[in-house]
Image (cartoon, rainbow, N blue to C red; front, side, top):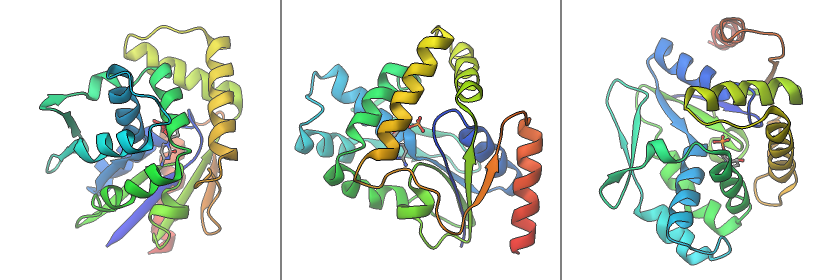
Length: 220
Ligand code: DC
């Protein structure tokens, strides 16, 4: 089965590239960040301490990911309610980054992530897709961008969702989050050995997609 992984820090355009490739190649799609964000969100609304590993694992095993056929849309359901629209804030992202350094929690989420790999194949995006979750993936990408580009992209994404934050605040938050994701002991963000690194500064999604498709065709 064809598995393509896309890793990188926040704001490099992983999600946009992943959705575009999933649509073009008609593959399934895993947004692994949404799993960490969902757990962080549920913990937040239930006032659960972010160090309470057992509770976090319980939440993770209670969330249902409804994969819709022929669509990259995945419904995230907790206690019968769809929570997709509540997990996008930077506050939730920060909490997601905090809980994601928990090794036991990460281990408990390996099988759910691997279960997204269904015929005809999968595009998986996140921080440890090519390094830990799908180390044998046929094709791996790692996206990068400078801090300002990353923050501007995130700002636009948040604006589209009706969330307002300042650019300087966002640069600080993204830096803090990236630093935490890069330096944690459990599955830190790394460039997998066999990944193609795409630098995305000053490139449109069309340019990045073109580079990715060229690499995919060269690998076949
Ligand atoms: O991709 P994102 O910004 O939605 O991810 C939110 C946080 O979740 C990120 O800062 C770290 C964590 N995460 C992770 O540790 N491993 C992944 N594969 C995906 C996300």
